[in-house]
Image (cartoon, rainbow, N blue to C red):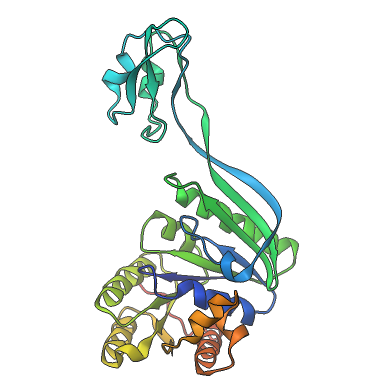
Length: 303
């Protein structure tokens, strides 16, 4: 089974739009949207849920007002200022409460409460789904706004996508990864067969590409590079491709700037589904070249 991951050093490079087209071009792929903090692949692929589960991770303190003696030890020890004084409603006694949005789940207050009046339940941080799309099964998730542990949710989505691929006897998992180089990205790329890094010919695109390729080198993952909207700055495109080769990655194509991308999104379609024009041809060429490079072992693993 091959696991191909599309990532970008920054948001807004067109990563998800290209992934949606790759999903339409792939044969027998299971799809995974690992951009759990801001998932949007579903906007194009319109998945129909067939399985849904809560994602639980981490803990948060809650003070039982009936048992609180109002000593304030919890507020004294809390480094995050998430515990504040309050008044018990039934008898007007001073007690303390926890601001759940500020609690970091460290547990110090729980362990030091002299009245054992603080509970420490596991938190529901989001949901994950197995769905059906017009291009095959898709595993995706939604992290609760402000919730942490997105790396764990990304790892869960990848695990479930591989399970679905085995159940359906599919030999390809296509992953829409998160942007950047942080924990969610590391969770999305570790152990992948190949990465396609989508960038753009801007100063920030060039800088962030360098960071992503350094990440690929560190984990020894074969990397390819696609430059989206390349015709906005051809000279910078050439420089970025030169740097990519020097970093051990292979440029596998360029995609021009075209309003066809926006028009396709308005229809809820991938570019290759909605428009037979030159941009769609660019995307098909990138997909074919990436697969050919992978099949012929042309993608190096950087040392």
